[in-house]
Image 1 (cartoon, rainbow, N blue to C red):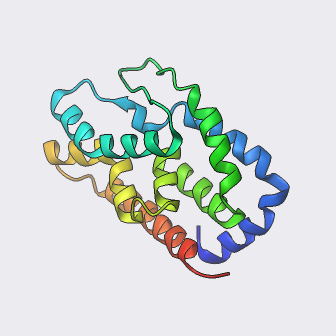
Image 2 (image 1 turned 90 degrees about the horizontal axis):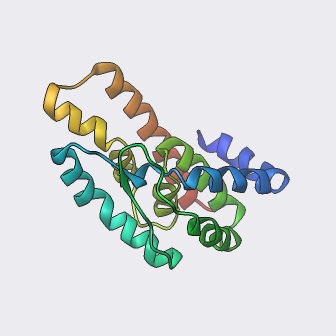
Length: 167
């Protein structure tokens, strides 16, 4: 999203915030960071790069998060109540950025880390594309995937810039 689109989105937040919060809560239980690979090399990478964010989120949310290797969805129902508290603490601008970032990143936790200044936009984009980056190291870069990652990274940079500017 571009800065002008984000400003318009912030204006619309009050009318749709409950619906958007519900979408984030539904999305949160299947967060990207909960699904680790069963491939040992990629799993090691994920543990190294994702675990610090998971631990940060656990501390912030005061809950224990469960992860899985495979298709089974881990039982992270506690995240709903914990995130509901965080929703009350963020203003419309922060919420709008969180929502846009979470959808872009496929991760409510990475989006939260971005708005809480735990991660930069570039680092969040890298973490959300971890499996793809690992595959690139194994088999080489895919030009279309690289272009798509650049678009996402640019959008996240816009979100980050908007988040940091005064309104």
